[in-house]
Length: 236
Ligand code: 13P
Image (cartoon, rainbow, N blue to C red; front, side):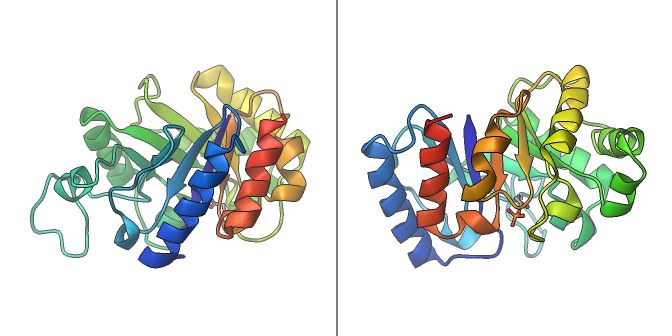
């Protein structure tokens, strides 16, 4: 299983370091079993960390250029300095709040694919689409894969329904099961679920057939809560 923490715009450089120290000690005492852990801290917290081999540090975004004049953006040269080779692309907050188009997202995908990055690519429908039923949900989610090479061997897809992110509303197990099964028919890559995952629902979500892990926002920001989820995953 992959248990991933998206810090979004939370944690400082100092608190990320303290979090990772605590997490590393937990993992070294076999708290997470065979599970793979991914942490996506804010850019300002990037550093060369000494971590257990099961922990990967990734970034929440990246600009598709080695370097150049892209004010406010981070390119490959800045990521290479910290040996970053894992990236989140297509998160709904970047699509909806920052206005990223599918075209820009596909450009980022191509660039980081060409550089050999592991890509956690996010898709997910808004509430009104979910209310239209599974066929609309699939049409919407598959449209977010337009221009994306779904045969890329380092691709992981995170299905995160927009209406379940940060809202406390989790998709039902049936909704997750059906959506992941339908996705798996089209894309044979590891699939994560994200959207209000917390210790109380981790076990049932991880037991869903085509679910290969979870991408956690809010409940990952507190290291105790994240460790609790890792303990649950260890027993799954
Ligand atoms: P929440 O866990 O806060 O709903 O966020 C999910 C998410 O967006 C992870 O990328």
